[in-house]
Length: 107
Image 1 (cartoon, helix red, strand yellow):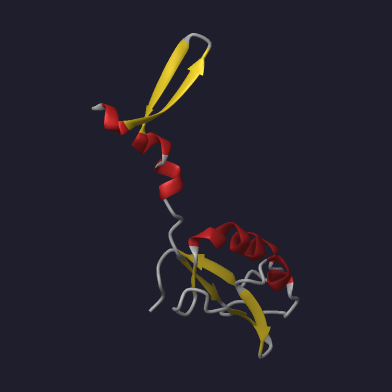
Image 2 (tube, rainbow, N blue to C red):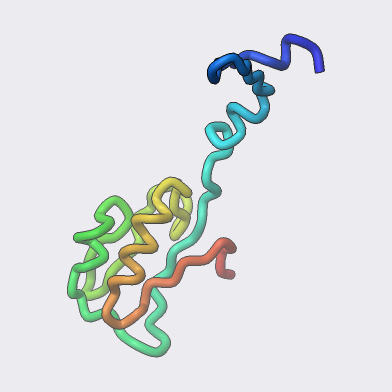
């Protein structure tokens, strides 16, 4: 590796540590991938309790007697990867388990 690939120096006592650029920015450059969220009422029905909206109102809405996934990425049911933790918490709190998280789009 040449010197241009190294940018960060830190000193620990008398030990100098040199880190390559690709290691420093690896996690910062990796955006969480988008995912899909569905309300699946094949086994249970949404009770309109609103827990999903209370936890993650940027993704969920109660409309027409059912929880709905807002159009947040320009494509129905597609959600920005940064919201995965919020959506997962909402899914975990759903008393009837109708919130489904998927990495692939349903046909």
